[in-house]
Amino acid sequence: MFSVVLHARPGQAQLAPSSSEGSSRSGGLMLSIVNPMPSAGSFVRYTTPGQCLDAMDRLTRLYWRDRRPDTVVYAPATDSIPAPVVHAARACAARFSPSTIPMGELRNLAQLYLWTGQDSAARQTIDRLLQSEHARPAHDRGWPLMLWINALLDARPTRITIMRTYLARLDALGAPAALWRLMAHDRYASYALSVNDRATAESEGRAALAAGRQLSSDERIDWVMSLEQAYAVTALPVGGSRGRTAALALLDTMTADLTPLRPAGSRDQRGLIENLRQERIRFEALGKSGLPRVHANAWYGTNGDSVYPRPGHLSLLIFFSGPDYELFSVLRRLHDRYGTQGLDFVFMSTTQGYFRDMPMPSATVEADSIGSYGHHFVQLPGPVAVEVTDFSYIPDGRRQNTETPNQQAFGHFGGVILIDRHGAIRWVDGLQLATEAMWDAVIRDALQLK
Image (cartoon, rainbow, N blue to C red; front, side):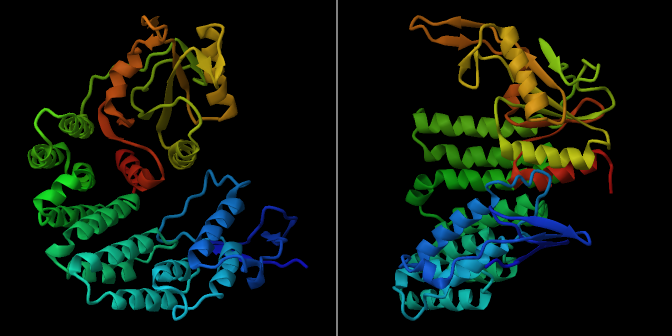
């Protein structure tokens, strides 16, 4: 017996496929025959809601295993779980009740309700858990609140309105729950960046820093990396909206605040200082011009050009060394939106003496392998510049590579680089799903698109 299951996403009506399906088109609508979902009896071996959550994760990965949504992305606020997975997870959740499971499983059951769209049941369940802990110290009560806030931000779609009510409850616990407030506001700031809500990202980052100032001395020492993250997530929207000066001033405060938390001259302090230095580089780079052209011993996919970035063009400079499908999928989407609007994509790679774990007989063969892989197999949306790496051998026989011209010129920025039409750096950051929305906004602004 087969069934047809509706899986609707925002702005898109389609009937959901499964890993084993037949399909036909009728009237422009994709009809997919879906294998029947497991019944409640199929989950008899699962004795806790947490096991249902694990099964839900496996079913989601199975659903997408043979699908590559390279050119489709949904914002967290509007994304959804595949309908067949929701159907199965609801059957699993139906085996449990908040009144009969152990208290330690209430959060898992609430999260299971949340991910299957049963928000009222989720809130009732988590409120029962929180009520059971009302007599405990504020610090202890803050922990489950922070976990639940993270669950609401991780849900698809995200539940921002509900999340804010619990965040207010966490803030009401005051200084004793400062650590969990730091983490919750930092997490919300990171979410806001992922949807390019820079005002919220900045305000939540500053709320995280305010909570951090209420930590005890020992907590500040133990959680210095969380404080560092809070500063970094606050500096990013500041640098994007008001420029390098404001971001660098915030990083100066960060340096003065955090470096004394590590013993002077210790490896931990040196590592912290290096992290701070790397954070500064990206903002110091903004507006920098006079950069050299991309160097290559061999070009692939240039269509006759060999000078990049091209004068008068907006350019993304990207280092790549192997398969990074999240990066590739984001790049394809950006290319679909802006490739005909004046945005160039330039990829840089180097020879290493091997390719895909196979030793190469010569640098020329390796360069050709890299170029063919990027240009033909992965179909990167732009030319590939391959540099031959000079190297020597150290006494123990290991190969020691020398920095290539591109690595010397661009590698220290530590991310993907956007060069504007006048040859100046417009933005530097990692490029992945979490930063795609901000990249999209930066590129539109640089192209002067509404």
